[in-house]
Amino acid sequence: MIEEFFRTKNQKIIYIREARVEDADRLHAFYKLVTSETEYLITCSDEVLSSSEERALIKIYEKLFNRLYLIAFHGSDVIATLKIAGSRRKRMAHSGELSIAVKKDYWNQGIGKKLMEIGLSWARNILERVELNVVDINKRAIALYEKLGFNLEGIKKNAVKLSDGYHDIYMMAKLF
Ligand SMILES: CC(C)(COP(=O)(O)OP(=O)(O)OC[C@H]1O[C@@H](n2cnc3c(N)ncnc32)[C@H](O)[C@@H]1OP(=O)(O)O)[C@@H](O)C(=O)NCCC(=O)NCCS
Image 1: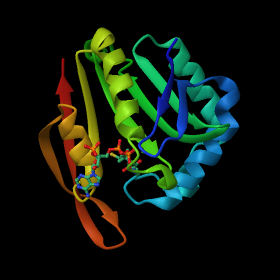
Image 2: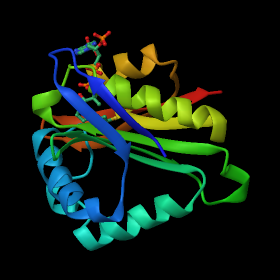
Image 3: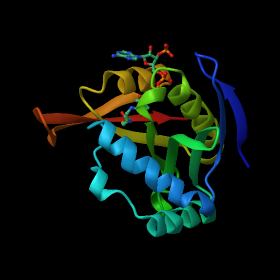
């Protein structure tokens, strides 16, 4: 079971642990908020999972050996999450898709990097490849992923339509 405390760049104490079923309501509220704060999360706030769907998802993560769902808390508030979803298909079970979101008030304090480091050290023992998708203008995320050893594998042209028009999606991956 992963459980860690972490001090942010501005001295906040953050507690990181794996998601539990009883977190579902707080996670639903967290995703409602973060999806309204940025367009870099492709999901819109009216598309986030309901609490009961979130509960079902956590159960799947708990059951599958190649999945990890981390939550970062400040006090009792959920302030960030990281998921690595290994494939359910046997021929791709060595490969996982990573997604991460940090609440806007907490950006640039090292929380994303810390979650990624914990997630990647877990993945190193379980998976052989971690992949992700990122919008071309999400410079903070791209810089973080490159720093942690992700490489660009391909570009999906005009794959997403944001408020200022079409954008490319970068497919990035890290192989262990
Ligand atoms: C992207 C995200 C996960 C990063 O998490 P974070 O906690 O803000 O990031 P960190 O503070 O750990 O690290 C960010 C790094 O990028 C750097 N950075 C910030 N803005 C940057 C920019 N415009 N260009 C390049 N680098 C930048 C920071 O200096 C920092 O590097 P350092 O640790 O060497 O100082 C977070 O900002 C977030 O959730 N954003 C909205 C949702 C999102 O984009 N999710 C990812 C979708 S693929």
